[in-house]
Amino acid sequence: MLKVIAEDFIKPEHIETVRPLYAELVRLTRGEPLCLAYELFEDHKQPGHFIFIEEWPDQAALDAHCASEHFRRLVPQIDACQTKPGTYILMKPVLADPNDQAASSASASTVTP
Amino acid sequence: MLKVIAEDFIKPEHIETVRPLYAELVRLTRGEPLCLAYELFEDHKQPGHFIFIEEWPDQAALDAHCASEHFRRLVPQIDACQTKPGTYILMKPVLADPNDQAASSASASTVTP
Image 1 (cartoon, one colour):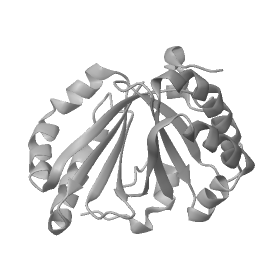
Image 2 (tube, helix red, strand yellow; image 1 turned 180 degrees about the vertical axis):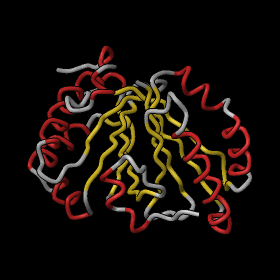
Image 3 (cartoon, rainbow over the protein chains, first blue to last red; image 1 turned 180 degrees about the horizontal axis):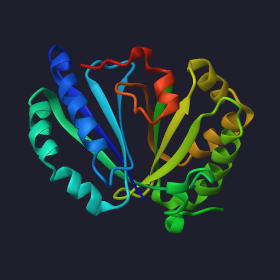
């Protein structure tokens, strides 16, 4: 399992501009056959700081997402509203939740004491 | 719903020291009655960069977690192994996943185009 945190920093005056772009990106990404989770959040304290928490089965699925028509069309429009470049972290689970099937199935790299 | 990303930066020589501390923290936190999710991840590229993704019903539940015996006992031991202070982001959902009951029930603050 590949977990991703992707952070965007949007100019305050463009926050309402990006909302419909994010809405379309989220809707179409959730329709991708390999998308396990794609959630969008806003920072409580910093207006314009948007955070995606994503889950993909593997790097190939993430690469396919980044090559999709909707990603290549919408992300440049969002990026044009940024105060600074976005950041991302690619992650693997450390301690899989026993109730989380997706995490458990990828627990080969899990380390437990 | 309150979503939290909390990041720790552990000295490479202390990574194996913190693993059992994290394991105990995760196990005991998941046992808290108000904990909705508490997942721990490692950065693929940066050894010692650990990331919690948490979900709580509200700020009071997060405050109770931070006041718990296990938090007050284990977090200082983990912090002693850091290269720099940890960071955290408190977040609210922007576009609730219709399949995500927890997010949907907290969608009062959701903005859709």
